[in-house]
Length: 449
Image (cartoon, rainbow, N blue to C red; front, top):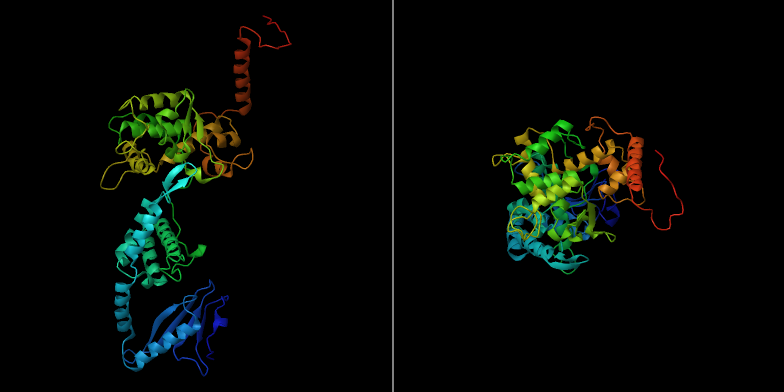
């Protein structure tokens, strides 16, 4: 039985509900639909005399539209129907007027990107408010193609759903979720009291069950086998291998230091000491943490050889070990990713050239971690070498979950007891070869043949 729609009906239930307005003050055709996730939408519906079917027209959603305000709009739409006027035509004309008078999506995006680019003071120095502003701007490319000239208030949740579905249909669910997220963040920004371009955000949070999920063809945890490792390492020395020598050396350095490729690319000439390399806080992803520190990583002999070769290439005054275009900024991680996988119809990547399958720059770091485990090192130490943060002295959970993959790489894994005794052997040899006893030593001993 029809009921008079009031604010008491704006309660999320366990299922979808539809309420028609009734009572002495009700408006015929005025409808409220509720959903379990808390979306309350007002409609006006009427019988179309030409088609014999019911036409449904969205009025708006709560809280921007109250029941009282929505009922007034429903009454206005009922008057258009009574005068034999088309609601769709009238709304299209009003949209053109609003578009001419209101803020368009293009204007909103331009203002938001300017806001993201503004330099602000961080604990590591001046930086854009959102350092990924270029990626954010790229996310808005398709929305602007669709609605760039639309007034912001015209963009509805149903329009956004159509956009979202296009990415999913193309096989890019991760991109669909990212674009949706960035639009939602921007619309929240537009609702701030200093701007008030929107009264409500048309993008509601998605339930996990409604999110598109990436279907990976390869399982997480790719590591290189011994044969693949040899192919990769020696293949990078081939002058015909894709990329220039510095780019290929960056990949080698990530493998032998277990640094992230993004960290390797931040290495500067003044950050290198005899046995360590320091990655400045400015170049680290973790710098927003209150306890973030510069990364200081020891260098083994292979790493030292690679770095020596790196700075022997090009200008002797070069600041960055792996400079990008112009030399004023470092090479980007994206460039190394493109170099590994190549670009369809543009250039062959390293993987295709060497006959390797689905190897990413980060897989090199994972491969190094697995080798350390097979050499007998425990998770806690491997986590420290990989600069994983842990609340205690134990290994960070990410070390075991994502890096230590049960794929045998070295011919014979090392018993940790053998490694410990070998280290003891080396220490004793160093001690016993000393020419004099340390000061304060109270114990005398004599070697017996």
